[in-house]
Image 1 (cartoon, rainbow, N blue to C red):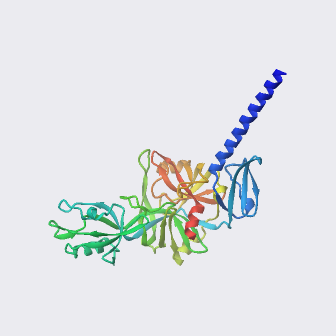
Image 2 (tube, rainbow, N blue to C red):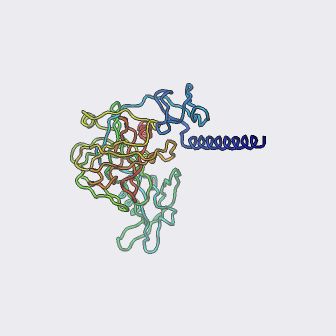
Image 3 (cartoon, rainbow, N blue to C red):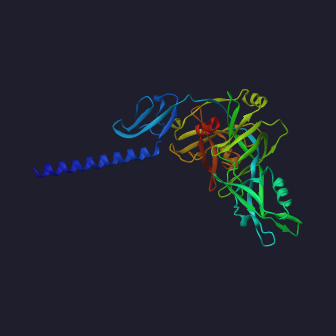
Length: 391
């Protein structure tokens, strides 16, 4: 009898441990699944990375469970037809004129820094000076120089906050002009990769991450911008600790179109009718894959490391964060293509925006390289970019 009691107690302890383990596993999955997903149909909501999860569907919600027995999470569903997109991979030049001017640094004028004394900081955006729009570095300098030392009221944007400061210029003996004690930038140019084109609207998306000022790291607000054709002429190969970089030339061909948005999910714009016809003619179309469609394993990217025509290169998706809070860092990918590794060392600057294709769906875009290991980097979900292009 005592042996029987001991056996029963052992079984109870073992069952208890199993249940604790299962519920702990359920909590693990709950933390990694999003609160809301988008899908064409409710019954399409299955997470490719977690085939062990079962789904119980209702009109606008799906209840995920472990092995159909242990509740994991209720997920809301937005039903939308996945768009068909023209895949990019072609390089393009980015020319941005800022909305205002960005303060990139400070400097003393005869041991005095008027900008610092006014409370201006690196990264601030100056949009008005004495109620005049500031559209360029020269415009701001002209207003400061013509002040003859009188205080100037500046309208400043810092993050989401907008406020006014009084700047009192100082006369610079060396230049014979009045100065504000700050360096500012009104425009920026660079090279990126186009991710996709929505043929139905003529809108396009690229980069997968924002264009930021190199001095301040701040996102650059767009006043106006252009996307221009580029030919890749050279490449600096990346290695551990030293990121590589694509080098290219802006061509004299007609501009692709206008850039209208610079956001955390990339840059977006509208193609001209001519460019839309050229870029979409005979181009490969793909259905966009939603985040739950993506799994680890084989995929490929379209990118250009020479000339202007993209090529296909193999990659492996190593990690997926279905519940990622960072819009541009949803997946970790690794370059596996020997030809690309030999040519570039992996992911290089300028490759951002290269579309990622898996199971014949456009699922994302390359965004960042790991400096310590250029064969690996981050990628963004395509649906994050498409959501921004549709806003």
